[in-house]
Amino acid sequence: MINRDRFRYESFSRKYNTQDLTDLFVSNYFQNPKKWVGEMDVTIMRKYQAIFENFSYKFREELEKNFPRTIKGIFDFVTERKAGCCMEVPAIAGVMHNKIPLFVLLALDLKLNFLTGLNERFDLDEFVWTPRYTRWMKLKPFIAERINKETVKEIVVEHCGLNMVKT
Image: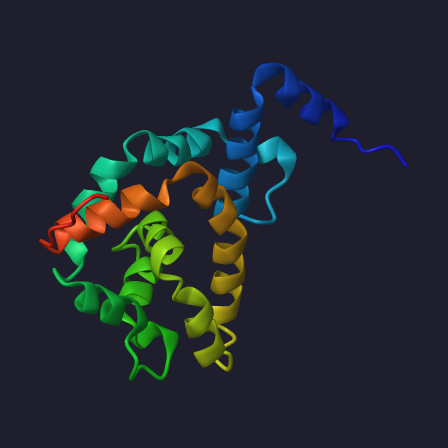
């Protein structure tokens, strides 16, 4: 059987380098997992790439705008231990309502690793939580590849006003 989209893929491979190709497919998949290759949009890829070009600035700005100023406050904001539903966790609700960019939540998860624990708690909340969690976990390795965990740590520590002695 011949893949009829083969020519599209070949066209992409001639037009873009490996990193751009990865970004094109990841960004378009994340926006719509059922998107046909012929509908892949370069502007979506450019927006995705822009996140990483100014990551430190954008991450710092989003922390200032949306997150508490203590490590415990941030951890509670992203886990909310007493929440019974994923929409009761302020950070998750913020992402689902487009008030907090997803890259901020995933960057924090790279350092705090809280999403797996939330998934175990919200296992019964299938309609809202499970599809999003699955897509977020598929995106996480691509974000981790582009973001330095130590940068995330430094920005969070700076945001909380803590002094760190580098050794």
